[in-house]
Length: 395
Image (cartoon, rainbow, N blue to C red; front, side, top):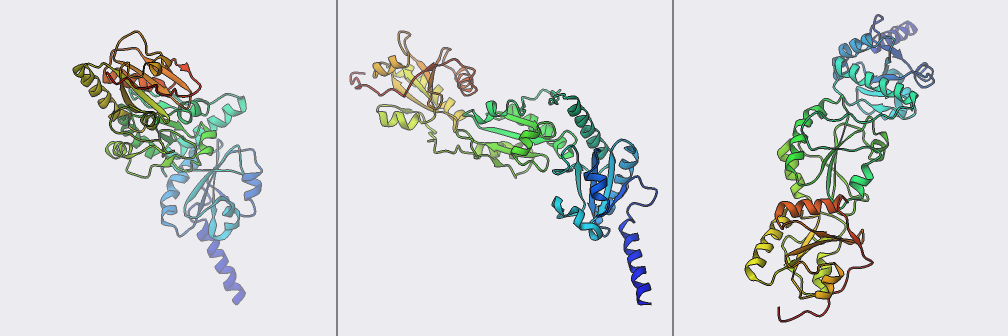
């Protein structure tokens, strides 16, 4: 009698385990006995749900998962594994909540977490994208991010250009790692596009499903993941954005950020009269104004520098001299023969200086400094920052 009850209990457990997916379902029932052979040792891609029969979210997912499996029957395998009876098969994959859904693609040892909407259309779209990637990979075709068809200024980053654009720049960057099928990413897109027009730093995006080296490098496990890369040194200084995903919150966050790596942040424009002041301004990237001795012209130029400084905080510091007070220093930076005001940007990291050649306005100066930061301006090399010569006291 006891043995009979045990068998009945076992039968009931098995029935409950697969109650979510009946015999007619196209969802393949995986167990600890068949998981290795069917999923890991096959050459086919699989989407696997790790579930518990009592889980409310799993029950809500089941009809959508069933429909997705029926739509993709014969194209991509869709399976489900009950963690309450066959948990040892799912144990290596960090299953800490239910349902956990993983895509086993080219690298079966490192499946990708599915973080999209739990709706049939989203699941089908996701798997068709993965199938396309696998097919192109087999053909040796490089998968490139799709160009944006909106009017945003969002910079598209790839495995190939990320270091040059972001890591090697002095500028701060705000970068979204997204997936094309991700519902939350689609909700963020209009806010992110708007931010690209209003923020004074580059706003960028990375398709983490295509740029897999970057996704692995920055441990992207969910979408969207947003990182802020501060001005200055970017080696291990990026931080994850955890705030609200709306324009106001994102812009507020940017304005609250400060540079790292010890760069002195000067929020005012000061007159440089000594090497000590020069070195406090020019420790990474600085903008030096050489201004006329006439007080009215000098004040007008200082106002331009001050307004420019507000938008450059954390990226470049600005200081100024009275023209011809340190003529040897000026000659070292090619500030000769054209009158005042003149402006030179000095990049200590690159060991280069850059001459500003346009009319001194806030917009022109901002454009110039951004070009220096992005390395689109042409500069002259120097070995070290020149020292100031003896100051002329009659100016």
